[in-house]
Structure formats: structure tokens, C-alpha cells
Length: 478
Image (cartoon, rainbow, N blue to C red; front, top):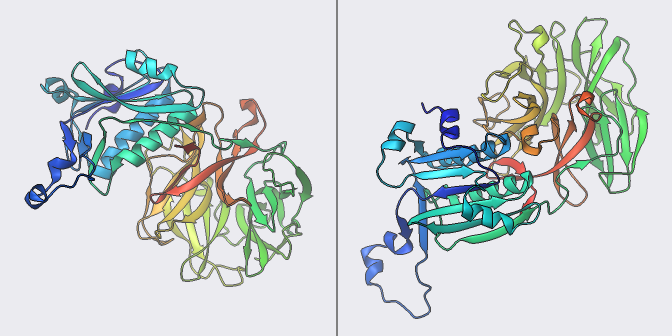
């Protein structure tokens, strides 16, 4: 297997753009016509065949090398996103470095951050902050695709656009027009909306009748009638009655509307069980008071369980998905678990089943399985947001059920939904999704994960959208 770090660093370090040298000959529309089409009469109104630059075709063993700045981890991660798209969508494999160097014909390079290259530097100079450009360049007989940008968000937008428009899963090719030159900018709206709530962990947003309610650890709620996610928040204080045996750890409340009532899925430490566990509370109003309906912890009494969330499957069966915390597993590795709920949400009607482990993914650096949240895509795929640590700190990953079932087989996406590497500013996690009063979907996290990072843990909202069976930031425009 190719050593990616050696491969990525082999060509040297650059800054602020991406270049690709075409791996194969240019492909035109005429190259793919049938004999019958070749003899068909042409009309004067037909557009000429557009010459295309072929980068890779499905199943190819392609000669391309990725280079990124060793001073900028973000550029490297987004260059690898192009590589992953070619591998995942087209089944492209990468030559070993020895084969790459031995290859006589022109290989393909993906250079992330190449302002030391004259054509890329010149293109970058034409851009303003948060702008990007994608351009095909012919130089010394070699065709390059230069992706220039200014700012980390422009980098994200440029790579996302390149992958979505030019790596064609349905056609089995990655190609661009030979005369390509497109420009765009990100941040059509605020990239990160940092709320004015002074400090709150595990924020969960409920939108009801045009009003925003944000619940967080401490069983507190902040209400906002201004329509502005950044400001206008007013504290309602604690909105839940403390159960008889609850003494500490009033963690991560989520409020869901179900059958005309409001249900809080949350956590506390119990003097009865000696463990943290999940419970469900109920109120007839978003503002509470929420009162326990599960007669104590609903999760196993000999487990530490936290971060329960609510999901109703396509058959109408309600579920609780929750964390079997690393503090009470046999090997110190956290698990994600799930159980079916009764129709009145007062008790489990099935034994909990394990869904996955914290170490089931290559990106995770910790043993926690925090902050689960369920999302079903338009095509029926079932996703779960959850948090662990990557190399940069607390983050949000995406797991997906192979068969769309809660108790199915779960796999882990390579690409994170949120990481400090994406912003260069703060880590953050415990994500959930909500849709604002204008129909825009947002990821809600607390960021940073530790107030020692430079500011207190604060609700931060990031616009996202569903795209090709996954979730991605919704910050770019053409």
C-alpha cells in the first residue's frame, strides 16, 4: 500500500493553490461516438465537440502524485479529498512512487498550495479574500488544471466544486473542459455563526413557531425570538425538574417534538445506580418544565450511558440511540448502542444492541463515542453524526448504516463534517442538525471543546446541505 505521507511530501512544499497535470490524452466528444453517429448528417446549428482533458477513468491505475505544503495541514487534507473522490467514485488506484518515477509518459500531479509555480501565483494574485478560480493551463506541452484560492474557506469551496462538477461517478470519468476557467467565492452567508450565548455545551436547537430554543448541559434553555441566530438570546434558566436520584452530570439535553408533546432526552448521574444514565422527560411546552417519565435511568443500570438521542424509523418505531460510555466498557473503548422504545417513550421494548466502536474509524484518536444525532437522506441512507477526537481536537464524524436500519451494519465515512483543520481556529463537536426559519439547514456544535482554548464553549452554527448521500458545508457559490 502506498505511503501517503511520503507521497504527499515527496515533491516539496507550496502554498495557496492546487494544480493537476492531465494523466492521459485529451478526450473529445468525438472520441466516444459510434460508427452510426459518425455517418449521421451534421447540421449547421450543432455545436462543435468540446475538447476535454481526461484526468482518470473508472478502474484505472493512474499516475498522479499529491503534493502539499508542509506548513499548511488544511491544504493537504483537501488535496487528499480529491484523491479520495477519485478512489471512491471511480475506483482509481494510485501507482507506487517507484512506478511513478519510472513512468516515461507525463504523470499527473496534484499540487496543493503551489504559489511557487508562476501560473498559480499569477492566478492567485487576481483573487480577493474567500475567492477561488479553476483554470486549465497549457505550459511546455503539459496541461494543468490550476485551482487557486485565497483563504481556507475558499479552498474548501474550490475542492468541493471540483469534485462535484468534474469527478463524474455516473460517467465513470474525471475530466474538465480544455478551455476551463471558472471563478467563485464562498461565504454566501456567514460561514460560522458564533452565538451570543456566553457559554453552553452540547447545544441542541428546537425551532417552534418561528422561535429558536437552544438547550444545553445544565438542563438550561436559551430562547430567541429575533430571527437572528447570532444575537437576541435570552436565558430561561433550568427548564427540567431534577429527578429524585439525580445528583450531578445534567448533560446534553435534546428536545424533540413527538405526538404533540415535547420530550427531553438527557443524562444524569444517579445515586440509586451509581452510574450515569439516560432518561426521558416530558413537557407540553418547549419552555418546560420537563418531568421524568422513565422512572429513573432507561439505559442499563450497570452501564455508564450518556447522550441519548431520538429517532423514528420508516415503520414508525421509535428508538433511543445512546453512548455506552468508555468508562464502563470492558476494554475502555466507547460504543454506540440503540434500543427500541415503547410508543409512550417510557421504557425500552428491546435489549440494547451495539452499533459500532470508537476505534472503528481511521480518523479517531480517542476512545469516546459522543453526541449521536440521526439523519435520513432523501435516497433513504441513514447517517449518524457523532464526536471523537482527530489529530486536531474534538470533531464531528459521519457514520452510515449499510442497509438503512438503526440495527444494521455501520461504516464510517473518511471525511469529517467538522474539524479544527477546516477552520484553523477552534475544535468543536457534539453536533446536531436543525433547519432555520428560512429553510437553511445548520450543524450546531459547541466550540471550542475547552474554554482554555481562548474563548468559552459557545454554540456555533454552520450551514450544511445534503449532497450525494452525505452532508457537506453549504458555504460556496458559483
